[in-house]
Length: 313
Image: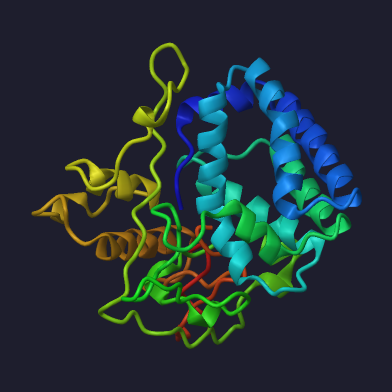
């Protein structure tokens, strides 16, 4: 899961009600567009057209707003992609709530007003007739785009089937909150107790580069794409460690360009341990992805019978 920069967290936390109001206005525009026969793409554009200026009034530049939209797509789009096609608005809201919670910096709670806005957005999408797979397609760039957040096969084709978390290799999943919104409000989004039999990570498969949003400059504004940190430089390992929830394994890296999957899995498992599961069992699956909701896990633990390979991909 990508991690929201602390500067943006501070900006939104300073006026959570304003952020929620901006989202509400955007959702009203999206709903009106859908009711008028607009496509999901046009409805999302209408939402952005309304939210953008309101967020700029709060201090979020247009470039920063666009980057946040890309980050949300990378973090939540895959979860929506793996959720059931008939997921309700409440289900989608729970996915978004768990997703935004997983994207917050370690130790930082998402303000309640923002969590409520995430839930309301899911309900609004359901009321407007927008399914979670439509939502996922609009949130994520298309397969083949460098920003596509899900694994591809050696021929460049996506390997995760819509609505089927078992097709997602366990290496591409991150444990969801054990006491999150999906677990409490949308238990049908959680994986089965015995987990999923995940597809193997074939040697030819490729994983996406981690999405890293650069910290705003001292003026507090992103000036453009040059401020989105590139993946693959010698800071890539540290960036991935932060995005996956910690830097516990960075000291073990001899080559900063080491394989991203190994580091991601190691930190995901550490995150699972931190959620309070019996040592050494990892946390159960969730209906979230990545990445982050109908996401799954693979094997059952002897400690509690839950599946350890959860779903924010």
